[in-house]
Length: 265
Image (cartoon, rainbow, N blue to C red; front, top):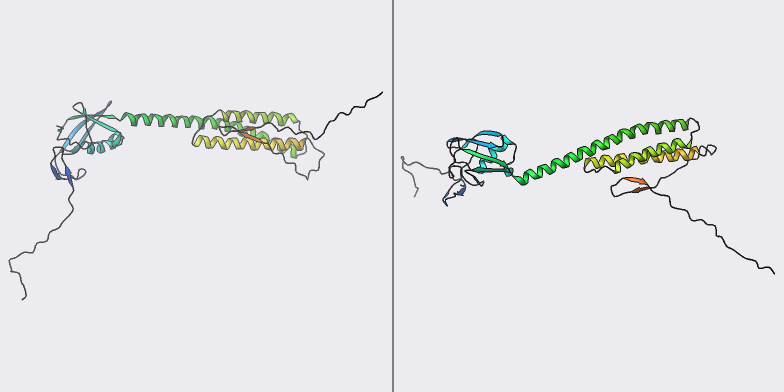
């Protein structure tokens, strides 16, 4: 038998959706409301004091203190987890509702920054300041090394032209470079400043090696010019990462001295 519906019967369709529930402070289970832009309910203005600054913030009347922190984050620059809100002399939790504790239109709320977060920011500022000062110190050394670099190039040019150079010229210039190396050693650097300091150390070491090679070749003007003389400077690395010239290892003499005595009558 074919079933049919009467003419006046309406077919209804039900749309089901998942419902989020929340527990009110009083213990009542209610449907969770979406708080934010486009949320329903009356709006209230809250006067928020943060040190010498004052903010008039509009939020839905049935918001939580956590919702208020999210709005204040855009105005104060403090993240919600960095904020502490006081109302009627008591710090309020994020899940407390404004209307449940008596917050009304034009109510006053005090905002202060979390002490632990404030301490972290101060430490970060100190580290950044230290890095900035270290970078400036390295930059001053770099400027001096640039001037010495010009002298090294000029000395090499003079040598290549065949002009005799006094050994004192090489010694003085090497000592000036070593002074800059000691300055780098005294700079406490971290992060980017440490990288820049390492670059300058390698530059100075390269210039010292060049001067050592020139000095050796200059002391042997009659040697075959086609034969290259290579001098390698041995560097010692300190705990700070800065290199310094190490003392030469003494060469043990291969000569063996013996004493033979002859007995006469």
